[in-house]
Length: 89
Image (cartoon, rainbow, N blue to C red; front, side, top):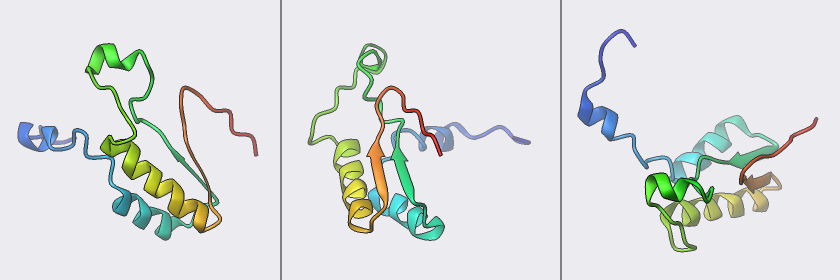
């Protein structure tokens, strides 16, 4: 980046990725046949680094479930990834 990012703007990006409506708009624009949700922090080892432990009521899980449901209703293959996935086309 040509200029240093102000700290408050840098911090504002944290944990802001779990937004069903924003993701839905991106899907509507690009109309993909597959959608994969990742970077959820679900890996068990991450709990020791971040102190986060997600439940079914956690915002990232709730929002991604909504997105997956929307995709499935629109005949888009959608999956929340965990660990790794091999995609072959």
